[in-house]
Length: 278
Ligand code: ADP
Image (cartoon, rainbow, N blue to C red; front, side, top):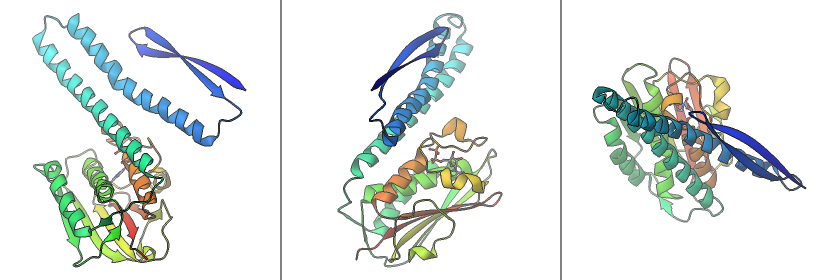
């Protein structure tokens, strides 16, 4: 059975398009519905900055054509919107790549010390001159674990970027970010478990902590959902809601675990854990 849905979508400036969706009602399972939603949601997220860009282009051509100061202002806003689209597309591609890799287990070995060296290098430009500082505390002689080094680095970068983005809240307060690496059993992890596939074996735990505003407990179980953002934070302006979804996919692929421990007004700790072989 096939059902057609038509939806008129306002694309701004009085124009609209009609979207037609054909649904195979009999076969459509939950996964398919989610994917349909995903595309709709991603399109919506991209359309918002695009509509703003289109609007500003019209204004630059028309009303602001002879107003250089206004032009400069608008160009600044346009650059911001373009950057937002770029961020969103980067994240969507990253999520898609991670999802495509998910059906095969990673083959490589991950050296924690090499991961930390890369994280240190790649976060340096983000921290340079900003209000956040990164403090690394790594145990000596940590063993390697089976995994994909690029993806493990990606997990830590996403968590540290979040600590930088959200850590200072709405102020310019200095944020102290900790990155602690230890060999540990998963039972040693504190906080709300948001991806418990890992067993009781030994593994390597990476904890990213910040002294930022913290996250209310009711949000914690939902943070790794695609596009989930906590309203009323800097998230609306800068976030895509995909960073932690990417983190969770990578951890699941590694049979790892993720816990979040947060106290409002005090800060947040994200701990990711990867099992050692055997
Ligand atoms: P985004 O890509 O928008 O940053 P994430 O999936 O990475 O989205 O994060 C989801 C939400 O979790 C964010 O909207 C933010 O409100 C919250 N969050 C993530 N990390 C932190 C943190 N370190 N401190 C406070 N809030 C955080």
